[in-house]
Length: 245
Image (tube, rainbow, N blue to C red; front, side, top):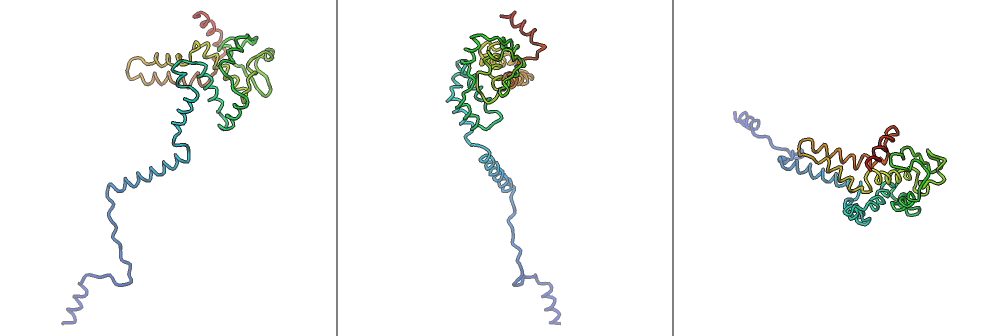
């Protein structure tokens, strides 16, 4: 009887871990706060690392410093079209090539400037495409082959007299100059201000869309493309322009 009762006690007694067996370690329960904080810290580290590899942390400050060095903010305040034009021509010269190569080329060969174009057009030109912004459509000047849409006039044309990287930049310079002269009445900053002011009407639900459309016209549309209207609109717009002068 005693043997049976002792055996029953051993069977019913709580089990104890024997030496040599792995003991299960108790893990602290994750709180609702620790998990989001850890995930957020990880995300911040990843994003910070990507930003450090992809670009300078002082990019915006550097751009502002460059604009100040070029005198652009002050030029905008003064409506100084010549300075704004020269800065824009430098900016578009960086497209499609590394900044170092573009900068080095401009240091050696210069770039089209407002005063230079104004002087050369002021001396007169025989090319019919240089009469106005609208006439300039389809210039097609090519620097390498030295050809254009009006080959009989290229010998006395001021467009090839500048030496940017390619003929497309020559066309851009004169198209932008003629746009500012003929469409913006010589005041690019004032023209952009007018587009935004005309769109800034009643403060209704359509106001953001109007301002966005005006911004696209001023900053992304005509100013970015520097392309005159289509040829089938040329004569009508030239006549309307002449009537309002």
